[in-house]
Image 1 (cartoon, rainbow, N blue to C red):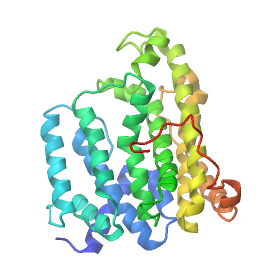
Image 2 (image 1 turned 60 degrees about the vertical axis):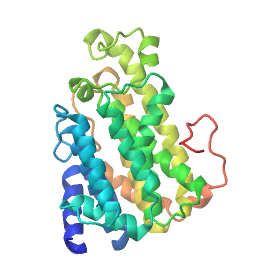
Image 3 (image 1 turned 90 degrees about the vertical axis):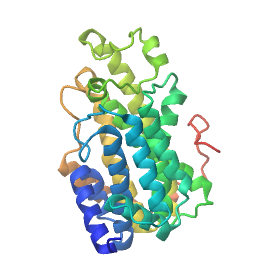
Image 4 (image 1 turned 180 degrees about the vertical axis):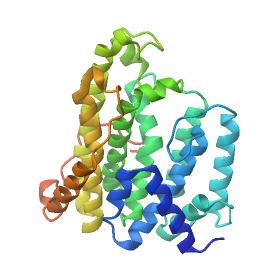
Length: 313
């Protein structure tokens, strides 16, 4: 099995190519946490690429045997979890960080179940279905990251907040990527929402439907903001540098959802990104928020009952 420095170097390259936002936020961690976050990210990115036929988050190319790709992902993940070499540094690094941080394996299985939903050409019927998907592909990662940052796996309240941040990120993704997903014959908008807007299946990107679609994208942006706000109440349980990284990432990614909502019908004319200067602004702002985070976002404040609850809660 490759040594740790080689695995970390591979993971650092993966995050640099796959996500500039997360790459910037990760620099705020202490060295050990940063390297572990890279290792976990590299596995998530590789699984996503396997599922979608992508290269570091590039154009979707889901053609081919989706079930075979899913089976390969499961086998490599199980091998890594047993501590055996897989021949793939993304999976070997994943096994290493799972053992080092004692992250519950169930979260990894939950993430893979999200890829399994895509492999079955699944579509959400209800809002709850959409949020369940968001948990599988992002909320579970939030829980894994929380444990990686030092949260006790038994601290369910803090893990709920970590899950909320993952949900916020994925809701932003769904809003931003509606056009790209449609091109790949995917749609993560609930069928019930489309019916409410009187948009027939497969017609949501038609020019005539844009005003109605803009209403739904603003709804997604508002939902993302609610989960982002809830997630901030978990930062008091994190070490200062970890809280800094989380608060910066929340702001950076939250701006994506806010910009999609602001653009309205033009949200999909060009891909929404958070400019570098605004990312740096969030780094500075988040740093100022760290000292008073426990007072500003008290952990004892109840999580809103209107928010979706992850499995088992």
